Length: 83
Image 1 (cartoon, rainbow, N blue to C red):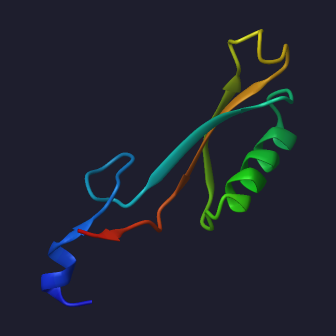
Image 2 (image 1 turned 180 degrees about the vertical axis):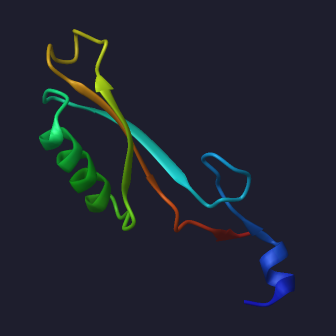
Image 3 (image 1 turned 45 degrees about the horizontal axis):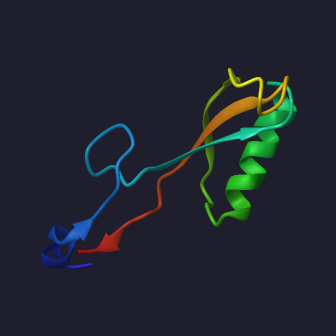
């Protein structure tokens, strides 16, 4: 890609400006565990993310969702769109 086109890319960012990271958070109806981590990665991949990192995982504070639910955040660093 040319330097001129590179200047016009719009990149999302998670931690650092223009790092191209997309973050997605959701709750899974399973206890916080390795199984929940694997399930979160599977969900993200089915949504089209390919370089998935489960960046956060904690017991969900919403008892109305499920008593043993896990709140997860996944990230992927492949997104950029022309501006």
